Length: 451
Image 1 (cartoon, rainbow, N blue to C red):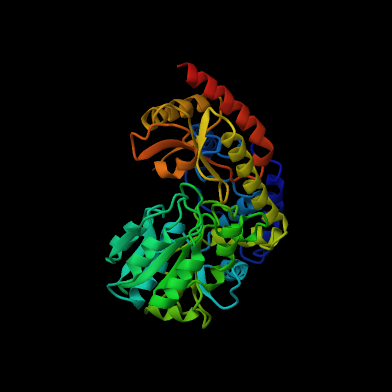
Image 2 (tube, rainbow, N blue to C red; image 1 turned 90 degrees about the horizontal axis):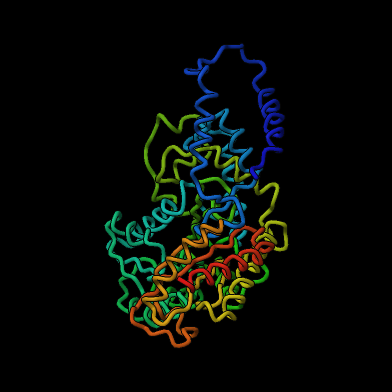
């Protein structure tokens, strides 16, 4: 199941890396506990078995995607150096690799000029984007949709910026009319446009948000942590396509290479269209930035120490799989969306289930049909557990009933929210496994229907 064949490439690469330091005097490194390492590693492997099989196509629950082998190997290779990309003297080669990799991501959005860097994940990346917005418009509000990631409200609190959630429409997207009401007060620093919500993969109406931003003067920040790479996919719906094509016009973007970018955790990325916002990061650290007149990444980051290994892994992956439309990487994303559309189509036609709206990306939400929302919610929990017994691992979400409004088919609405099943089909292999997933769901529906 686990890739072991490529380990020989790591050994070959280590020999090549070692050649670069061959002229140094030999020394014997001190390795505390060396005689017991084998025993401890065996125990570690045993402990790690206590996990869901995140790498397998039958895992379709949370947003967990295995790193590409080249990312794993490049990350491991860099660990023998253990570079720190805060300053150039701590990560000279990997700082250059980070700048190149980040430029590749920026180019995917049509930006040649930009300011950006890698960070620990989407939370830290969004914090930096909202921090910049708050610095440029002190005391003004941050707006995001009710289906935006909870981190935006929490980050706003950390930054001591007022925050308000904007209602969603029946497809989980920010409601333009409600947004228009909120921004009419002209007290908004930034509006967060979510390009792929965590719960349903919904894409906010970026065209309308940009239009309002031009009228009222607020910044538009695109939280594309999950969905950002889908701009490369050639099989999006018209509305989502329009939104992704307009990302070049936003003020800042967050994307998580450790989701669809095939990277190990944690690897997030924040980008700013205007490089001039770098002035906001200015600080004095004469003991850190002494080795070069070139830009040190720590000079444009709120984080200090950051793993150069993450940059090496991302650089290697993008060298192997360029971020271009029609390329091998893009085709993988298209397969994920095809898988989601296939599964949604099967669910929508089956009377045993109630489906939400069609997926915009690769997330499918649905529930077992029952006489009432309360009953369906209870049945969802039973189905979730039954599916796991068949080695199919899904997730559970609590979503507004209006997301299912068109497909309720007589279900009594005795609650405002429905506990439903959520399936994230983010592995290209899912396209080949939809049939098996559907077979298991059928078995699960029969089992739970008899209970």
